[in-house]
Length: 283
View 1: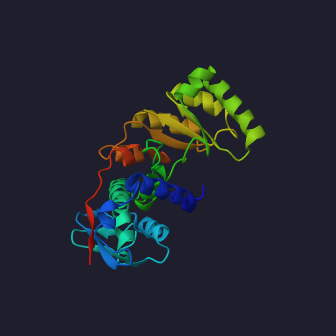
View 2: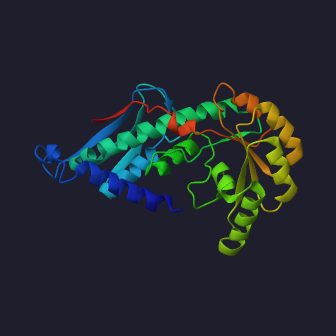
View 3: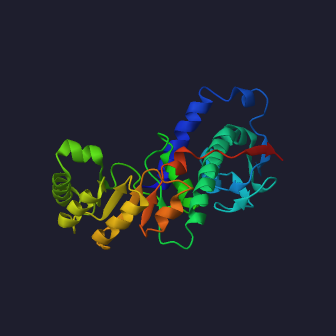
């Protein structure tokens, strides 16, 4: 996936949605030739995310625009900090203002929430993954915010990994059958495509371990308690990557990390993150 190309598509669609037939507020009050500057002001503590994206948005709107950057993506921020100053035609600044703020406020909220998890997991083997529980057509930047916050991006979409979840297994007729069919499919269609399989019990884990070595690269332990994970990991014996999923939050993530599981996946990194307060003001 080409991040810059996907971002260009996202920005074009977002600007078209917002501007429509024209930014009449700006067109009616500001001469087209006017040049100006605006500063991105931080109004809430957290982790900054979206500076690089903001720069790409302004460059897409006006290639000659420039940013003087004072804080980078991933840096801690506090009320009163200044992230950057943009210099461009005033029409460009006002056309891009709301998109830049919406993107950065959302991304900063996700990065901040993700950092809470990654800070808690310091010193443990376990890493935190995001999921596909994202906002339609905004996944690109939500997952980038997770990465900025220190988390790891799981698969981006349905196309870059096979994940055999409960519905796939049930519709297919069983866990062994689903694994065999997907493995055969991969050999013919895309030999580099990895397969992950969801297990719902320790018995499922035993069945996967018995027949899937060399076929499956990761076993998801779905809605397993920490005690169930401790029972499952010796059976897996390091032959597959392991991922705990379901019901994991800031209050119990350490309990899961203490089991030694490789990854915990947390949809809440994105769908429960709160946007942070930023503003873009004329200098």
